[in-house]
Every structure is written in C-alpha cells, then in structure tokens.
Image (cartoon, rainbow, N blue to C red; front, side, top):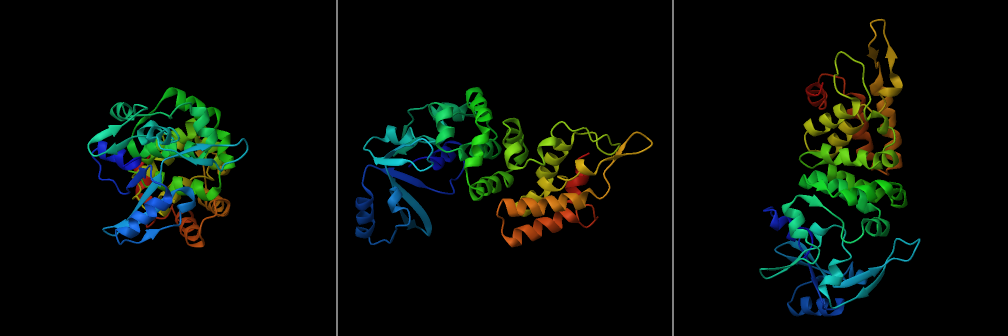
Length: 316
C-alpha cells in the first residue's frame, strides 16, 4: 500500500482511495487479476497502472518505477525498477512517500516524522520536484488546507521562487486541484498559501490586489482578502458555492468611489464581479453549468435570499 492511503491511515482517517505498488510488470499484474477471475482495467496500463474493483471500489496497482524528465518536457521517461525506495523517491511530498506492507512501514524520507510534526516537505530538492511537475505547487496549497499542516521553509521558498511555472500546466489540471482545495473544511489556510507563494497572481490575478487591501468602510474592518477568505470558509462545502464565495468581490476594487464622509463605496460591485466570473469561467474551461451557476450566485450575492448572504454577513 502506498501514498495517500498510508498517510490517511497514519492520521486516523479512513482512506477514500487505495493505491498499491509492486515489482510485478503490468502484464504480470493483469494476468494475476485475470487468474483471480476479476476484470482488469487497462486504461493506465501504458503508464504501468492496472485497476481492479474490490467491493465495488476501483483499486490501482502500479509497477515500481523511476521517472526522468527531459528539459522542456512535462512527460517523464518511465523505467520500471525493482526497488521500492526508487519508486518512492519520485513522489511529491514526504508524507505521500510512505509504503506499508503488512504492518511494516517503508519510509526512506521521514514522512512519518513529518506527519507527526504536521509538516509538508518535498522529497529531495524542492526545485526538482516543482520543475518536474509544477502542478505540485497547487497540490502544496491543497494539502495545507486538507491536512492543516505547515509548509517546510525550504519547500515554501522554492515554491514562491518557481510559482510562475504553474503557467506550464493545463487549466483543467488547475481546476481539479482548486476544486479539492475549496471543499476542504478550512480552505482559507490553503488559499493563504496560494497568495503567499504568489500563485494567486498567475491563476486568479484579479484577486491578488485584495491582499492587504483596506476597504475603508464602516461596515468592514477586515482587509478585502481576509473578508473573501471568511466568506469561503463560512459557505457550505458545495464546490460551486465556494467558487462563488471566492469570486463574489473580485470586481469590488474597480468600483470604488469615496464619499464626503471619507469612506469608500462599492456600488454595483456585484455586476463587475459577475463579469469576472464570465471571464474566469472561459479561461478555466468550466462547464456551462458551472459557469451559469457561479455567475448567478455572484450576480445576486447582495440579495437577502442569496445562499452567500449569510456567509457574507458573518464576515465584517
């Protein structure tokens, strides 16, 4: 057993997915599954992964492998190996680089220690891990939110230095990670890291000016970014609702006017924010259903019957 399911088990959380690795070749895995009179799922066979359903749940079994990235390419050269340590060394973070056989753990990178210390640290050199697959920058933020762990300082520094690399990753992969982040129990802590390592500037640039932005309003004592994070946290964990919460004030700064009392007003900022949703929805390649749902939620978030209204009022 390897990866996230081992990590979750160590945390006392029931794993949702189970992954296994083995020195057997994909052909040997497939034959063993057929011999057990089960159906092998072969979609990932060319990557060394064979699936099989157990009690209705798809389990993936992958041949031990090492990966070598050619400069300028996101697709690694895969070599099958017989050494579990070599397989674990290619993984992103130490907490995901632990294997378990029977009741014994194989933990060459001190992932169990990092779990105990609630730390997220890259396997090996962080710069190598982030350059191999820049999506790991977003996964870092997602794991912070999911696990409520802290980021190792070297990992944090390299993530900030290489945050621009996220532009090499497809928008569809961004959305998969952001969706997972947004439905965690406390997405704000992951979104804080997203801003701190400057990923926000590349992924959702209209939100970046919200950080440390003084709303200059008698109704809001918090910065605009802190208000946005609160609304996300206070909203029910529905992915579309959380996206709407994240973007509900995305057009607010552009609508600022100052009144005679010295305060600022943001009349019709919901219209500007809804326009941003249309732009982001197309940019992030959302489905039409999601685009329309989030647009309506943001456009109407000032109305008393809005699903966002309670969360918005809770954050002042």
